[in-house]
Image 1: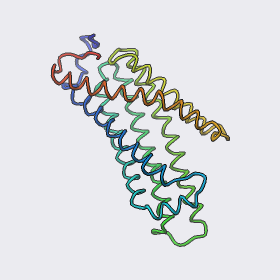
Image 2 (image 1 turned 90 degrees about the horizontal axis):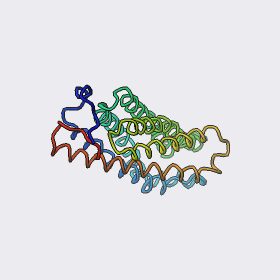
Image 3 (image 1 turned 30 degrees about the vertical axis):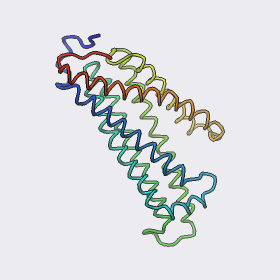
Image 4 (image 1 turned 180 degrees about the horizontal axis):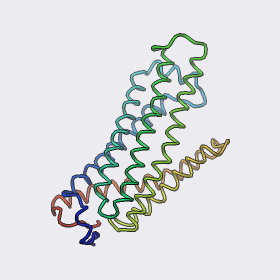
Length: 248
């Protein structure tokens, strides 16, 4: 199904395969890095119910924790790459909405990278690196780890808006399969509800498991589907050339 009308051709990227493949492959790499940082680093080292044990693990597993921090920074950089690449892929379908989606992804990356500073400061306090001895170092380290967690959650409000806008653009234009757009909108709504619940509910912890599950299902389905479509479309566009733009 041809999507773009003749008067939109001037806004198409000259080689749509390149940004589509870039976005798809970057999303795959981001997923691998994020999962590694979460399950091989944070879940093994950080126990929110036993901060003394957490500090001990940070001290004995400093290289592993630093690797997790580095993974976060790479993910933030890749988020910027993905935002720009997605703009190039979808600008033909609506430049304003594509730019809005890309801007929110870049803002999310900036907030996430800033939040990651909390992990680095917590590690330095835990190991005594560069800080004078203090009876409150452990409490400060705990506060900085919380800063990372809450900063990331606040950043997800921008990511949620990115997903919703991108999904709406896809549903409206058919620039990609509309069911992917619908999943992106659903994932964006779930992220947004979870993020605001973190801020508004004093007893958020009582609902965290359910809310995270409600986020994980549409988020995983939508982002994996988008990633697969981008790679497939990019390969097909490379073979066909830049003369057509069709939804898979």
